[in-house]
Amino acid sequence: MDLIKPYVYEVTRRLPDKMQDDVALELQSTIEDMLPEHPSEEDVRAVLTNLGDPAVLARRYSDRPSYLIGPALYDQYLNVLKLVLPIIMIIVVISVVAEKILSFSGETSMLSIILSIFIQTLFAAASAGIQSVFWITVVFAIVERSTKSEEEPFGKAWTPDQLKNKPAIPKKRLISNWELAGGLLWTAVGVTVYLNASSLFAIYEQENSEGLNKAATVFNEEILGSFWPYIALLAGSSLALIIYKWVLKQWTIKLAVINTLYNVLWVILLSLMLSHPDLFNSAAVQELEGALQSDLSNLTQWVRLTVIITVVVFSGIDIFEGFKKAREGRKYKKLEVEQVDRTTEFLKRRL
Image (cartoon, rainbow, N blue to C red):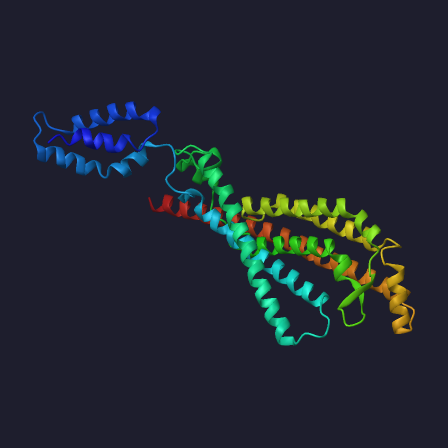
């Protein structure tokens, strides 16, 4: 029985039409070269067994990956999921809890509120998580199929020479996933709070047991809204910095300088916003002054100054830590070079 033709057919039928004829000729020639001059059926069986399953061999000929996300991208795919999903879950929980607190009427038992928050959070988190996984998977699948099989993602063919440009990163210089996740969380929560400031920072009054009604917002919505382009610019800069950290994977002097510029931008924007004379809603201030029977002009100034000083201190610490980590990495590299030089000199003396 001729086993060669069925084997070639089983391979080529799994390939695109434009490849089938060329692969059939190549595979037929390969099999004939592997066989002795007068092959027996056992010889043919041995050669076909050596070539392996036709389905597996067809995947080797095909340019299309047989997996959704291949090994070259899989670790990065998991890292992105580990970064994004916890942040989304936290934002969902904060949103649901805030909504329940603001809609609380006082007539519902605490147990019912807790159960309602738990159920609503569960469904909202599941929905947001599924959508996030779906779109992240789609992006990585597109990247997987937009590069050639002999290349790494983003079109860079791997060679051992690339190891020369990828030295081991000292631990003190390494940018951890937790650091990246913290930056993403801070940006996401900050933008969420800004966009919902009119609901989160407001004076509520209860009327006729129908829940809480907003009496006045703490911040002037018109003034707060005028800063949105700058907030969007700051959020975009933060995301760009986080992506750059993710690509770089270590602190460098250049990264520390960029981080300094970002912190300076953040401090300037916040200072301009908080120092605006009409930032606080006069109606809300009057409501609080009437309720507390006290002049709050000094309190608002104290709040502005306290927030600005706190942000300046934490930004300064972040800037200092960035340069410290970058310099520690350079010291480590210098010590490593000196150790190699000493080892080389020792070997020369011994030889």
